[in-house]
Amino acid sequence: MTAPPPRKILHIDMDAFYASVEQRDDPSLRGKPVVVAWRGARSVVCAASYEARTFGVRSAMPAVRAERLCPQAVFVPPDFVRYKAVSRQVRAIFARHTELIEPLSLDEAYLDVTETKTGLPSATATAEAIRAAIRAETELTASAGVAPNKFLAKIASDFRKPDGLFVVRPREVLDFLAPLAVNRLPGVGRVMEAKLAALGIATVAELRARPAAEMEDRFGRWGRRLHELSLGIDEHPVTPDRPTLQVSAEDTFEHDLVLDELEPHIRHLAEKVWAAHQREARDGRIARTVVLKLKTADFHTLTRSLTPTQRPASERELADLACALRARVERPAGTRYRLVGVGLSGFVDADSYAAQRDLFDD
Image (tube, rainbow, N blue to C red; front, side, top):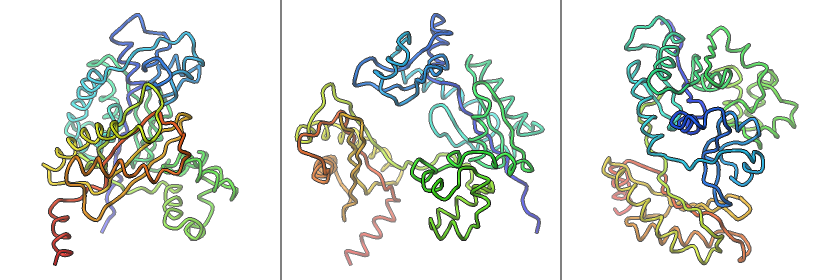
């Protein structure tokens, strides 16, 4: 038997998406440092134009810090209805080329173009056609990475931003990866980066030079997975319509609150989350795990979760469990919180869950 040909994967990433939509729709904003966020101490940056990024402004930073970094920035409140409409336009362009589309967010997606509807001669030609259509139909730009698998395509899409295209051919994979910092590999955050640095591993080439067995001894299955990534190995397919992993809602307060003051906010959020969960339940999927998220006044994020013996069966049960999770927050009583969130995760097939319950009931 012969091995199947390498996959041809695209990662398409819209450039500074929310900010670019604002600059497109308001010509007076073009060329200016635009920050998509509400002003004030309670707000965080949703997006920043490339002009604002030159000052160090980044998504998810507090808006007050963005204002300090770039006093001349133009703040624009987010308009997600518009952004979602443009995102649908872009996904319609993707769908002309392939049905294998895995959205990651409103502004990025993986596409498997090993076989396409258009018959274009290569994955590179497909990426060029998609980028040209996005420019023509939305007046926005997108960057693209082309590679034999998903994680390589995602790294590649960042190489020529904005409005760029970078291709990693199968024969180029090892050379492409070798000089990169290990934190470019998926799943390598600051903690793992520090652990690898303690072993003298800073680049992918240095990681690749270590025996896979050594990495597995030190870090378990994740160590072997890291070694595979250093070799460019990733067999995860593009998965359209990925199942929901969590439904959640959160609220940032006008004034910081202590734990005892959070109950009405938790119950309000539980109402929203339960409504979203019921939509999933209609498709035969139910959640078992309740999640409480808190952010302190000094921006530390805390998460507490519980998987009860019997899943929450109502909005009230969800709210009761989420409120009870406050007891597992080991912080001084006077700690103040700027944000609370409620979520449901651990989705399972409803029929499978019912069958398991029947076994225990017997």
